[in-house]
Each structure stands twice: as C-alpha cells, then as structure tokens.
Image 1 (cartoon, one colour):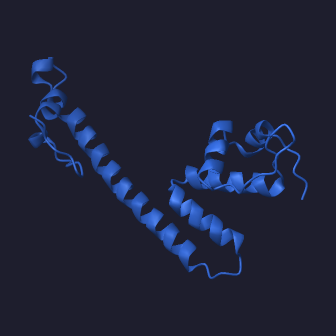
Image 2 (spheres, rainbow, N blue to C red):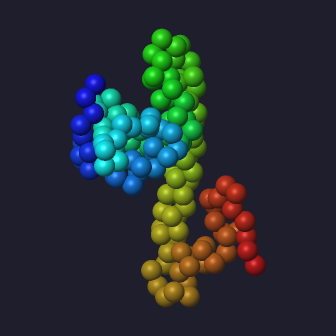
Length: 147
C-alpha cells in the first residue's frame, strides 16, 4: 500500500484534527507509521479509513478502550462479533440512561417555567426551585448538596 499522504492531508480527509491524530498514535489507536527521511508521518488509505472509524466511534460516544477493542476486532475480521455487540449494547444502555435523565431534566425545566408567575423575581418559581433543591422533582444522579 502506498503511504504518501501528509498528516495535514490525512486530517482533512478524515475529519480528525492534526493534534488528535498525533494523540491517537501516542495511545496506540494508530499503528506505527512510516516516516520520511525528514521524520514526517506518511498515511495510506488504510490509515485514513482507521482515522475515520475512530472519529465516527468517538462521535457516537464510544470510549477509547472500547474503540481499541473494536479496532482489534476489525483487524481480525474472522472473529465472532459477540464482543462488538456487547460494546454496542453497553453504549446503547448508557445512551438510554442519558436520554431518561435529560427527559426528566426537560420536564423539570418546563415545570419551573410553567409555574413561574411572570411577576417579580421575589415570586419567581424558577428562582425558588433553583434556590431549594428540595423543590426540584428531578434528582440528579450523584448530586450532593453543598452548604
């Protein structure tokens, strides 16, 4: 495979910023790259596909360790896809938890706004609810009160 694309061209082609590409190389998501006599990295088509894969996985919220595992699976396509399915299921479960939390948050904000008397700040339900977490119907996971 010809490796003749500079890091800047690889960044443009993959949508991954140059410092991020270097980071991916440092943490082992990208394989060691061929370099020119001037020590410039050279990227080929497979490297660009790998960068695009990583970018897309990050956009979907996969953590670096999950991406590393998915890349290892991709590098050995004869393996069963059970591990990939497990990773995707775990990500889906996390997305569902976040959606539920955001839905509850949206409802709380809507309630705060609806209950607002549109009068003076001293009578504003938004301010009251924010000032007294006990008034809030949406309980934040892991939230603690500070005195």
